[in-house]
Amino acid sequence: MRPTLTDASDLDSQDPLADFKAHFALPEGVLYLDGNSLGAQPRAARDALDTTRDQWRDALVGGWNQGWFDAPERLGDLLAPLIGAHAGEVLVSDSITLNLYKLLGHITEQQGGVRPVILSEGGNFPADGYIAEGFCHSAGFTHRFLPEGAPLEPHLDDQVAVVVLSQVNYRTGQLRDMAETTHRVHASGAEVIWDLAHSAGALAVDLAGSDVRYAVGCTYKYLNGGPGAPGFLYVRGDCQRAAWQPLSGWHGHAQPFAFETDYAPAAGMTRFRTGTHSALAYAPLEASLRLWQRVDMSALRAKSLALGDLFRACLEDLFAPHGIEDITPPPGQRGSQVGLVQRKHGYAIVQALIARGVIGDYREPGLMRFGFTPLYLSHVDVWHAAEQLREVLESAEYRNPRFQTRTEVT
Image (cartoon, rainbow, N blue to C red; front, side, top):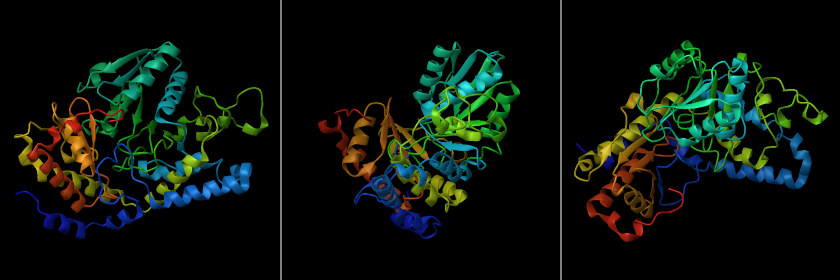
């Protein structure tokens, strides 16, 4: 039986995370199901940004001694518990792209170049493959793709140095078994770098418990750091001094203000810093991460799955009649998103929804993605979003020519 509004209200009355919604500045009349692309703004972010701008105005360059300079390490320690890491093992810095390049260089240098292949996964968000290809081109390695959906073991030969994998697939939401996969890669003699872009802040990640040594991620999706917010990287404590990282910037120097001619890497995660970072970009992220210190990750995961299941249950009778394929994995095997494929009209359906104030996103070919962010979405919100999609489909509103025009960013 299709869930009712009363059913959704009953679920909200039992929600231990319900109070968190008040901490986000959401536009009136908008149901936001795209936190898997860009998270909503925490209310505290505005004050944090204002404070930093005031420091810039009043302290000028002295702001670097008022919390700006050590922000990458400080925010890394705030982030660490959310991904199952220890203090001193996470650095908030640069972007996933640059951090992945750093780790590829760091790992392959300590291996001595005896394994010449970098393996990344087909069907993954292409940025990881792009940077792996670029690293291989410049460093003399060979890049291979793991075919989408293929088992990993046949591709783990003695030539593979590093495997780059996403914990959650950006298209399907498929969740990999991190502990088992890490064990298999390590047993083959290779290293694995985990991309946590679609898992950090979406579910409880357990890097230490999964014996992970290296990971990267971003903070502008589920962690609500803002557009272009800095990325992060994780290096287990016992691996941090194993080698240099290739982007040896001055903030990663052991004594950056000694201005020595030769590079000497700093101790610990600081060696993975590069150049000067933006204090303005770190301020709203820190506000969000301080809010996250109060979040029960097990409750977050339970609500995430419940929201996705509610959305699908409200719509499942429409899938076949409207040519929609539900590619969402089962609850224990997915991240925090629902994926529906309508190859002919998917883009237009999403545009029609956006015009009604329900924001999801679209990815080729035909994929309508809906992200479920438990801190600022209620069950009632999700029920109403599903009802809007039902009306768009049943009325064929999406066939209106104005919904066929493509925008630059989808």
